Length: 277
Image 1: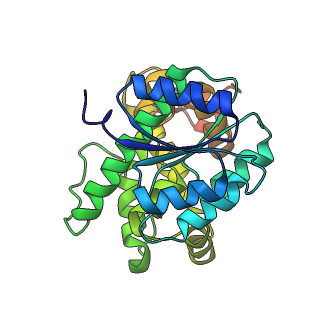
Image 2 (image 1 turned 30 degrees about the vertical axis):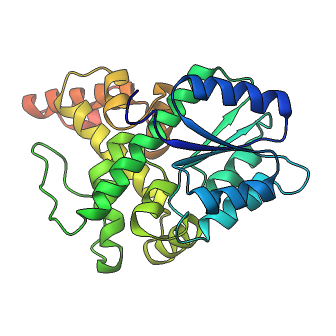
C-alpha cells in the first residue's frame, strides 16, 4: 500500500448505489473511506475525522454541495482540504460557481474509477506541495535559468501569492491552490488581487504560463503539445485557445511570425514588409 493510498477520503453521496460503488472501488485501492449520505452528516464527519480529501455530490435533499464547500472553507482546520465535486450537472454555470467557491476539481458523470483516481492523485500531490511550500515559504526563490523575466507587479502584500504562482504555475495550479497556500478564501483573495492589480489570480496564473510559452516557442524546438504540458496544461486545445486570446495568434502562427521576424532582422528587412500569415 502506498502512502497516498492510506489517505482518508470523505465521500458525501446521497445515492445509495453510487455511494456503494465508489466506496468499494476506493477501498480496493487502499484508501480509508468515510461515507455520508447527507450534507449535514458530511459536515459533521468532516469536522470529526479531518479527512485528507472530500468527494461530494452537488445536489442533495438537505444541503447542496455549494453550501458544504462554503462551510468547510470557513473552518480554519478544514479550509485547505482538497474538495472534488462529482455531479451529472455539466453546465458551465455550475462548474464556474464551484470554482469560485474554492472547489479543487469538478468531475461530471459518467466517469470511470480511473478518472476519479487520477483526480484524487493530482489533488493529493498538490496538497503535499502546498504544505511543503507553506512550511518553507520564507525561503528565497532561486531564479530558474533561461526563464523569461518575472511578470508580476512588486506589491509586498501579495508577495506570497506571486511567489507561489511563480514556483508552481507549471503544475496546473488553480485559484484554490493559491488561496490555500496563503491562507485566504478563494473569493476574498481574487477580489483583493483584482482590486489592486486589475487582474484576477487566475489571470495572473495564465499570464505567467503564456509568458513562459512565448519563451519556449521562441527559444526551443519543443512541439506545441510538449510546451502545453510543460507549463501546466492537460489539454493542448485549451492552451491554444488561451494563448490566442492573449497573443492574438495561435502558438503555431506566433512561432512562425517570430521566426520570420528573426530572419528578416538578420537580413535587414523591415518587419512592415513581412507577408501576411
